[in-house]
Length: 207
Image 1 (cartoon, rainbow, N blue to C red):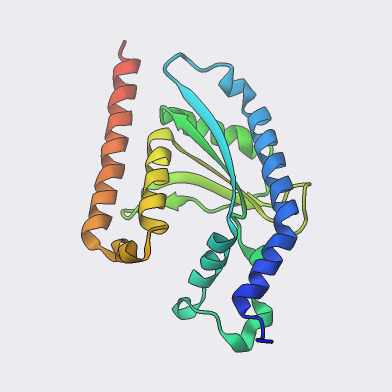
Image 2 (image 1 turned 120 degrees about the vertical axis):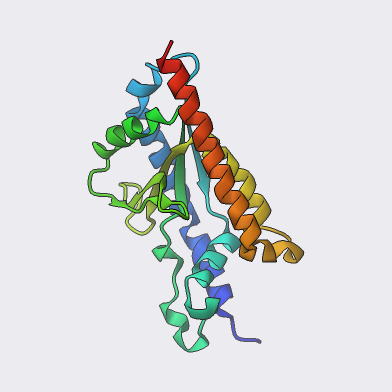
């Protein structure tokens, strides 16, 4: 019988962790929704605050760990060192807010509940912050790290399309991630969405 590969071992680990990943996801989503109730109840008709969650898929988790290795490959001589439990986004919650002014408010509200979680903000190519992001452990598990992001709704919805089209493409499209022109277009989209939000808020405040 052929010896199991590193990928096989990681897939086995994933399905051993899966019940805990789901528990962390469910608890984190419930706690965040509860913590954000004071904001949700006070939203104006044009404002939105949406909480979504997802459990990272097995192959996505394996590939995510692989990308973190030198040269993007696993070393067979270090097989025992690889573990999916080090990933911060196996259980993840995303908070989408519109308009942008609600982002900081949501962040401050959640920091009272998760004061010791580690901050790891998502930044754009020019250094501007695109999203608040934190990770840490919750009561549902001491093995699986939870993560939550707070991002503008327009940017978050764009990321959903971008992730499917660019980061999880068919084999013939994988070169897109290295395209300088595509990276420029992505940055242009971020700037355009931010300009829309800022102009919208300016007009609303001026009424």
